[in-house]
Image 1 (tube, helix red, strand yellow):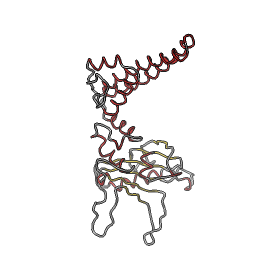
Image 2 (cartoon, rainbow, N blue to C red; image 1 turned 60 degrees about the vertical axis):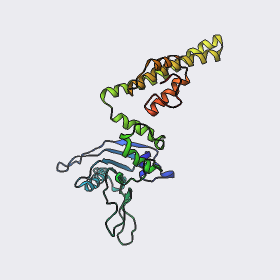
Image 3 (spheres, rainbow, N blue to C red; image 1 turned 90 degrees about the vertical axis):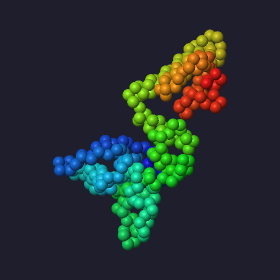
Length: 298
């Protein structure tokens, strides 16, 4: 939703608040028509459908394929005995790692920006109409925002260009939705073993939350007998610290961070705030050592 809002330049009450993913395959009900597979299809709360594609290399007939996919999505909405007014608008969104239109353009031709939006218009007056099928292109090759992108559009372009090369999250992308998008991109490159470790790490996080809830419950029961506030605080602290220590160990294993004896001693003796801060920092920076880190963590 955040990506589509940025590419479609939606604001105010036109912002997308909900989308439903649709089956990506498009099989026209005629044997002579070919099967077309698109990357993502979705529909928003206004019933507009989006065909989102990504392309690394320019190939012959690429523009025709984009038009074909969007047009087919529009046509295939209509079934027997249905009326034309039931057809929803379709927007073809294409992110490509090359320039479809030259930059700079040939003499006498206007420049096409990195983000371009296309729809029909009357040739003489420029009046816009027949907007049932529209097209949006993000040409990553035209990105000129440098290593410190400013603005939501440049940040998305930087994300698509540089995500696979990043070792730490840059400050410009240290916010949602980019943090989550970078995590998804990182998972996409996992091997089967790494994915299993990642799942274990997530399970450890759930265990930590469960330990906290159990400790709070036990602390509450003991607190009723010995003093509510003291028992609850102690139970919460011990359960949370234990869960966080296990979680830090799993995160380190996932990221191939060596748990030296000094580091294990630190975890064994750390109170709740220390492993919690360490876990957050490791997940952010993908390493243990950090200026101002905990005492005894080489």
